[in-house]
Image 1 (tube, rainbow, N blue to C red):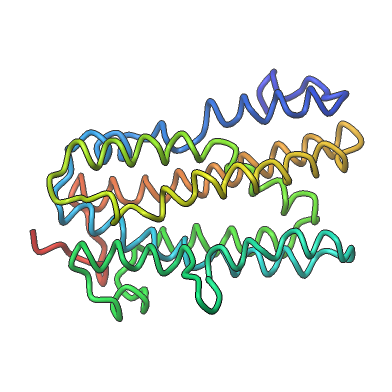
Image 2: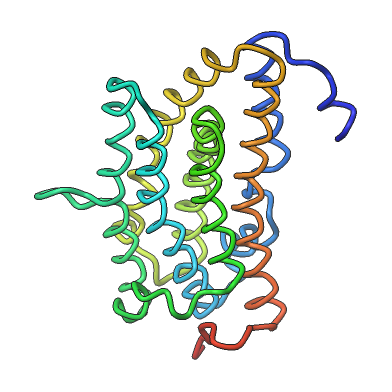
Amino acid sequence: MNARATVELKSADELEARLREIGAARYHNLHPFHKLLHGGKLSRGQIKAWALNRYYYQASIPVKDAVVLSRFRDRALRREWIHRIEDHDGREGAEGGIERWLKLTDFLGLDRRYVESTEGILPATRFAVDAYVNFVRERSPLEAVASSLTELFAPGIHRERIEGLLANYDFFTDDVLAYFRKRLDQAPRDAGFALQFVRENARNPEEREAVCAALSFKADVLWVQLDALQHAYVEGHVPPGAYVPEE
């Protein structure tokens, strides 16, 4: 544990400040793979590999949220959290984030059945995402909610992604990036609720440290997925059974 983390967090304001420090230092917008993606340095095939692997994360988010929902005994909390599942799964007459992501993979030329099967994703993608679902199942409800706080930092990376993809790749169009535009509104709403929840419910230094550890864990989940993409599709070490771009 570093020296900064040994300082007791004595208030909700100190907790929030530490959470924002964690995001500034560990959020995956800092990863070299994202700099390549947003800077126009990847081939279409490498972008397809990213979209294919990211689908497994997107498709697992409502599963994760259903697990979190099941942890709440308070009906008001369940009513608040349930919209996250609809945001991703959609409902009759309204598409969700998973469908918008599949439109992105369709546009890139990936077969939808192949994408949905998740057969070609990297082993590290599957392990990292499954670890996240298991985390919210096994840890306290407070830690489960805290792990979602990467959404505090999501709007910045979404804006950067939209701008970078449109500016640096001539095959992207604005409507294909609808998933990211929608999250510009959804993520701040969700993060605001989760932040208020941990501020109110982490009542002692030990619980506040657990909240910070949960956010750090989630940052690691996002970071390791990009490590795997970098290793496989930039450095050229694609594991057996994983997707191999034709380009």
